[in-house]
Length: 350
View 1 (cartoon, rainbow, N blue to C red):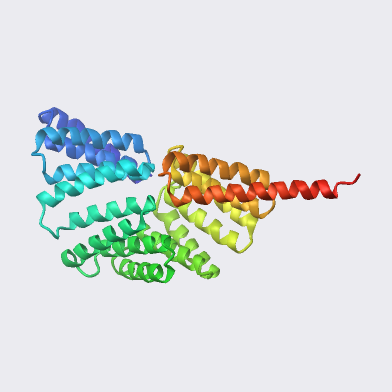
View 2: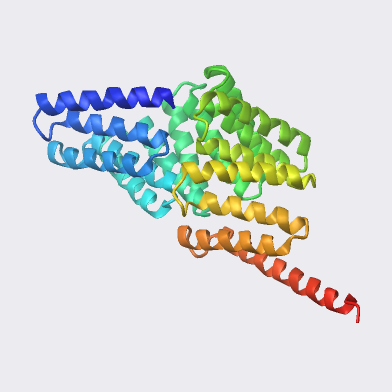
């Protein structure tokens, strides 16, 4: 967090100087606003990030031709903030506008086109539209294979994203292959505690968990968390993912007290790092509910499932699989409560 604060201070000082030295709508002012917005985005301060990026876009619309590549950068940055806020339809709109501009302004295999396809794929993945997500990510990878060296980090990112879609589609062997290819590249090109390595270990752990290889899954998730604790601020949202994933493995191993502890730590971080109706809140509530469900504390389970349902209904499309999933959890736990009540009545002493 200290490095982000230093960067923010430097960018704000540069903006002050540029405001004095330059005309009010000079493109260098937009550059400063974009830099400031990027830091706020990395700090999970999304409203400040959005304000800065939108100010940059306002300046660029005045200063530049309508299809200038720098406008695409601003739309892309705004999309990134909306994505992190869980506002996926707004993110998609911004990313698609960036892609439209880049198709006009750039050569057909320019790396920035790959970035746009990649970002659009990530949004579709979050929205549960997996075939569209896979198509976008594969288009991104095609461009990157042409435009970049064979071990470039962006190729690793493409393999990781393709693996994520396969994971969500339940094609775990394909997912694992993609994640391992990503990790191979990252180990060559990145420092040993880079956050992207943590993401790969997290994803490999997720696949191993789905395949029933729980000790491998736990080892991968814990390696991810070790890296994140070194590389990221203490309440960064990525740490919440790792705690959540560790909790998931413990839950599958029937170690419910450890699972609950990990899920609650994940939720604590998300309460600090994310807006109140972010979909990841719902994931935490659902997972905590599942622990209480498994240990027979059905009223607590129902309460957490209903919190998850409320948030997902507000933040996701109505046909998203998560909404159907949590409704099923609610229906099942209500049935369990009714059976428990009936059994209790039958066995109650007269």
